[in-house]
Structure formats: structure tokens, C-alpha cells
Length: 188
View 1 (cartoon, rainbow, N blue to C red):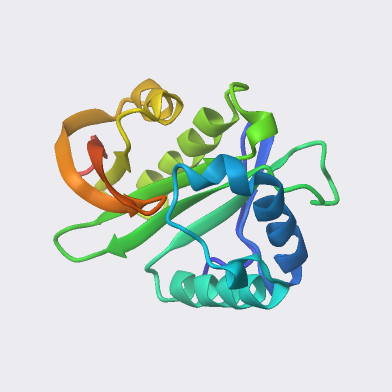
View 2: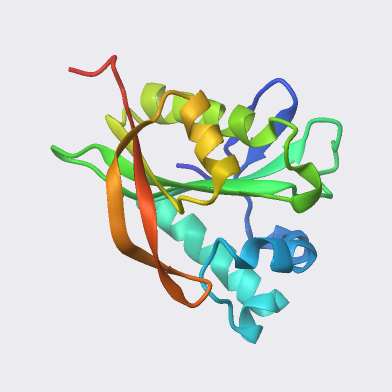
């Protein structure tokens, strides 16, 4: 279903990857480990191995085939060989039935911050989620002091549904998160 999916925006290509890209995914995480650590769960040493990343990509493809996940990796359009990953966007825990909802997650390369790439990429994924996947609701949970991340979703029309106390264990500590939501106004 999702294997081979490739979406484009003005400056970006958003691409579902298989395990053949594990070395590029590993390179992305190695380059950005210090930058990402403050916003993510603690990673084991095994996470930073090629075998782990290969298995992770296989597991993600399986979840995508089951309709539970959409995960794309971000490349700049001029990178026609897809050599340098600059981020990823995921729609996690896609639930169907009467819910038609998911959780949004994203990360960007430290060297590509403040260029509008993440806003552009998330906008394209939201369009795909609402128009193609027919989702009704996208939820993002963001640490209050992650101002850059909050700006991304606010620019795209997400609204604040409140503060979730000690919501996720990030960088070894339970942290509060602002619950941001975007509804598909086209769905009844």
C-alpha cells in the first residue's frame, strides 16, 4: 500500500524508505543525535547500528502495510540520488472506525532548521492524510519549550486542546506536552 510512496512539495521529496536506505537513516541519526536527544526518548547504543535501522525500516513498512503508520523521510528536491536525509514525518497509531485519527511526529536535521522545511513537509503530509487517507483528526503533542515545533503546527492551523501533564518520557524525564489538534473540515 505505502511502499514506494513518494510525495513532493515545492522544495522537498517525502519518501517511504525500505531497509536498503538503512545506512542513510543511520547517518541521519548519527549526525543529529545530540540535537534530537532533548526532544526524544533515550536511545540505546543498539539504535545506532545498521542492523537496528534495517529492522526498524522493515517493521515500519509492515505497520504501513497494515494501515497503522505512515512514515516518510525528507530529502531536498535537488538531492536526486536521495543521498542525504534531512528529516522525517510520521503519522503514528492510525486508528480507523469511528475515530479516523492519528498522532503526528516529526524531526529535522539540525543544519536545516529555520528554513521552513518542516512546515512545508508537514503541510504536504496533512494534505495527504486528509485527502487520500481520509483521516478526520491529526494530533500532535509538543513539549512547551519546543517553540520551533509549536510554530510549525500553529502555522498550519492546529489548535491547542490543553496541557497533558507528564505525558511522555523524553530524554529520561516525564514531560508535560501541549496537545495540538487539526481537524479535517471536509469530513462530515
